[in-house]
Length: 196
Image 1 (cartoon, one colour):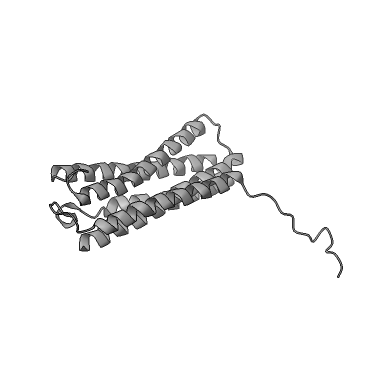
Image 2: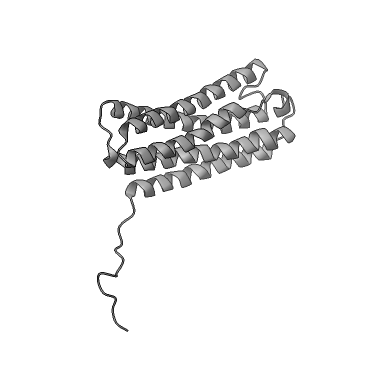
C-alpha cells in the first residue's frame, strides 16, 4: 500500500482554545441548569400554601420573542464582522444588546408583579424554586449584557475589526446557550408549571 502524497494529506490544526473553553463552560452551566430544572419539576404542586403558579404567573410572550430574536440578530452581527462591515456589525450588536436588555427588564417587571401578589423567594416551595431557576437565567443574561457593553465600548473606540471575528463567535456561542436555556426554562415554568 503506497503512502498518500503530501499534497493530499489533510492538514490537522488544533481547535480554537476559545471555542473549546466556551464548550466546557456551556457543559458545566448546562449541568447546573439541569439541577435547577429538576428541582423545579420535583417541587411543582408540593407547596402547602399559595400563591401557586396559575395564581400569579403570566406567560412572557413578548419578552421571550425579544430574547429569541436576539440569537438571530447576533448571527447576522457575526457575519457582518466576518465580511468587514463594521457599521452593520455595530448596529446589529447594539440591537442584540437592546433585545437582551428588554428581556431582562421584563423579568424585573414580572418579579415586581409577583412580589406585589405575595410571592417571594421565601413564600413557599414554588417561590423558592421559581426565583432560583429564573434568577439563575437572569444572572446569565446579565453577564451576557456586560459582555455586549464591553464589545460596544471597544467598537466605538474603533478597536474591533474583522480580525476579532473568532472571539465574537465564541461570545455568540454563550449567547445562543442563554437563549436555548430560556426555551427550557420557559417550557418548564410557563407550560408544564402552569398545568400542574
